[in-house]
Image 1 (cartoon, rainbow, N blue to C red):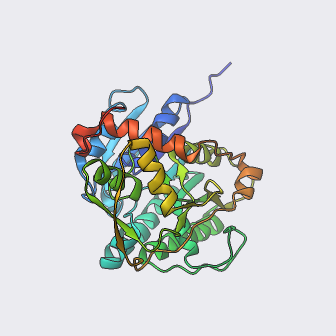
Image 2: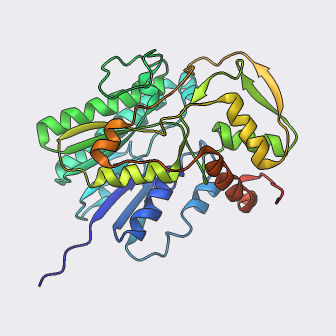
Image 3: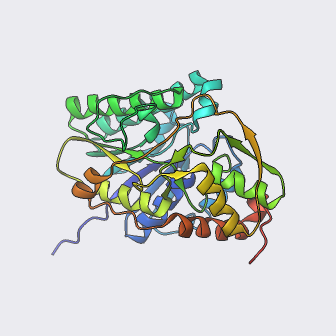
Length: 331
């Protein structure tokens, strides 16, 4: 009896926050993985290298440093046979995209098209795209549903994610690539990017420095633990029903800014100094995911409470203080 071939995934953004966790899971599940990252200087290379230190010598894994904007360098990914692409590489962040929208267009749109072209050329049948809740923008109808065609983005970053989804529809329609767009809702947990609120606030609280507290504290986010997100990505890799689909991956619960800071104070054992500031341009007042479609179709079921997830994040930050620069006391 012929042995079944090991499935092979190409993961872009493999040294990043979500990407490195996904590689952990795929290797554990027996996949062969090719990871790609360009170590964008948005935050330190040392942190990203630390994310993948456990992958480097793992059987079934190879890593390629390349930029998705450079179609010639992407040829180094050949001549492998891939079963799926999980495209997580992107210039991230709503506020930075307002300052440099052209760079976001170049990486997030042209880079995505380059990868779709590779999928077409190499006949890769399945493409999973890391999209964002930011595509909903200021749509007042909450919780946000994939069935709601009203998308009101208010940042260049959000517009690039919509563009990626639409490119996926084109390639699915014309070339038969199965395309799943996953709209992530405020992912947090170990290895989180240092610019994101939970990570940034934790370091400032421990250092006894003020945290920027935008608005009156009533703004809310549907915080989703990275382990739950990875479970949703893996379910999308097994999805075979429709040629093009969009799924929300969130937690279906809104955590206000006030509740987020209060939880950090409890986990860290230290009070925050709040520096009250006006709401930020480009930020939406609330994100809230309707996850009924992902639950029904993918079996997606996030199970990590916010307090538990923040506790796991703080434990990681204590252990990685040499990389992050944050010195967290043990409790």
